[in-house]
Amino acid sequence: MKPSSLIICRCEEVTIEQLEQAYQTGSCTSRQLKMKTRASMGACQGRVCRQLVDAWVHDKDPDSPHDAELLSYRPPIRPITFGQLAKGEL
Amino acid sequence: MKPKLQQTDLIIVGAGPAGLSAATAAADNGLSVTVIDEFPEPGGRMLGQFHEEQGHWWVGKRIADELIEKNRAQGVSIRCGVSVYGMLKVDQLWEVSTSHGTWTAPRVLLATGAAEIPMPTCGWTLPGVMSIGAAQVMTNVHYVKPGKRGLIIGVNVLAMAIARELSVSGVMLAGIVLPPGGPLAGKAALPRNNLQVLMGLSHLAPSPILRFGGKIAYALGMAGIVSSLFPRRGIKLWDIPLKLRTAAVSINGTDRVESVTLADVNAKGEIIAGSEREEAVDFVALAGGLYPLAELASVAGCPFIYTPELGGHLPLHSERMQTPVEGLYVAGNITGVESALVAMAQGQLAAASICSDAGVLGEDGDRKVVEAIGEVQRVRASALIQFHPGIPEARRKIYRMWQQTYEAGV
Ligand SMILES: Cc1cc2nc3c(=O)[nH]c(=O)nc-3n(C[C@H](O)[C@H](O)[C@H](O)COP(=O)(O)OP(=O)(O)OC[C@H]3O[C@@H](n4cnc5c(N)ncnc54)[C@H](O)[C@@H]3O)c2cc1C
Ligand code: FES
Image (cartoon, rainbow over all chains, first blue to last red; front, side, top):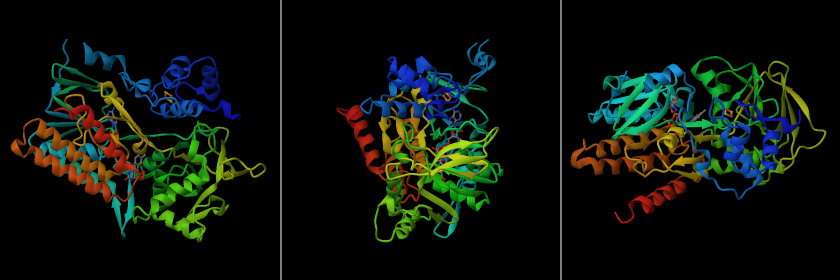
């Protein structure tokens, strides 16, 4: 198996190769990479892969800022059903 | 239809050592407290921990049971199997949304602990590959062996502590090896760096885990920290081979883990061509380290700071465990990765702060908070398991930053 086909985001099955392609076409921060590839947008909301995507970006550009804004979270932070959502909101 | 809101004085998210300690302390001062945790039983990460300390065993499960008993006696409501998925401030009250309805309270303490960082290796999505913490939970919490013979990829304090637990529980380990070099592992793939991590830890505390370093130094004779002198076949700690000059290249198998391809590496962590061989194992544990699990602090609007010594991005907080967001407090590993005893002391401190802010401590408030701060410092200084040597200094920096930002001119 080529290292480039290593999966980095398990929920969305995003490989290093896909991150590389996105990076080459201008997605340079973890947030841009997320928008482009869906890495860290999956069911676990990045709990598994976020740190990896961040480490990968820093390896590419050691001067990139460790900006928490790029990694902000939005509710729901856990998978929930429409029923549960409705109970809380109606 | 308006949903029924369940109101208390204090909601604590997380029933680990920090959350449970805070809950009894707050209930002791008369607050009504609800603790919410998504795991089926309370105790957090303590449930799976045990280690030898000066001749006797420290068993996390036992400490957790005592705390739970105290909480129950004080009427604290502990709700397990409930996930918090969001929180919002509406008119001075936090509305905490969960998989089982909404709770409200003027104050919320986040004690959500830390999460693991995986160590991706070719083949890491095969069944039989798990995080080191999952191996710990399977073995020590559910009493199920993760496999017959396993391999740990990644060298750090957590990996060493859990390797020891697995071996005590009768799980066979082929060894602890380095991760493959590359952009994801960084320094973790360098033999010298790992040796320095272990050596650096050894003098901090006299615990058996950290005496590892001393044993390595002995194995090296008087040579000092020269990784090329580390024996290629590794050295044995208890009965587990620690191989700092061997890396995992790939995890192999058709439907599940069957073997791992290992190779020798040079001091830069590069594979020495021709040294590849297969090691038959049926499970692999990945140890990439821990980071504070702070999603809810972000959702609540708390600013973050980046502190590598404490595990990365963490919510900005004061030495009293307050965040800049009114009514929002933090304690335990969410404020930085440290041991369970530190988390317990932080929980008590957070409770003192909360009770003082709620006005139930009267004139004693400040004195109790100052005492609790002293206790955290004392426990931290004597902690046997230290995840990073730079923790006290990193903490001082955060509290200075807080003072400059929020207390200047007050
Ligand atoms: C895998 C692992 C192994 C460890 N092993 C050791 C060890 O051997 N020795 C040691 O000293 N330290 C160890 N630690 C460090 C450990 O985190 C601390 O010792 C201590 O348990 C931290 O306490 P805490 O109360 O901050 O968090 P935890 O004990 O982690 O408890 C946090 C709780 O919050 C709950 N939670 C999180 N988010 C939500 C949510 N959104 N909704 C509901 N509930 C939520 C979790 O289910 C969990 O029970 C380990 C940590 C991990 C992650
Ligand atoms: S692993 Fe990437 S979102 Fe879950």
